[in-house]
Figure (tube, rainbow, N blue to C red):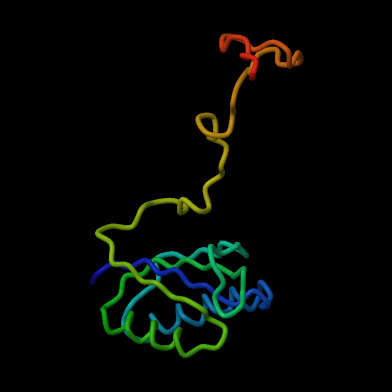
Length: 138
């Protein structure tokens, strides 16, 4: 059977238990239609890039499935009809990656981006460094 990855975004005013209940609900829909859920993750409440149905945040959930296309279509159909689900996206993949998704991995490796290192002695603002002195305007 083909392998899929699904991301669901639920309304922000749901509780965490209700959002995790949606994961279980859609997992049973996949299972009832001949597929199985390889793994699922609840990513929590995250800020979205733009408003969807007047919501700035949403509960994100991630599912990895091994299911026929009919099961995926039924799950997407029910997700689009569900009042609590704002968006659903399904992507067919060649293989599932082992371990947690990139979203769940700890973000300790920020050395190349977030750490600016030693910036030298910048206490004296009169020192222009290697840029030279300012010219006077006339």
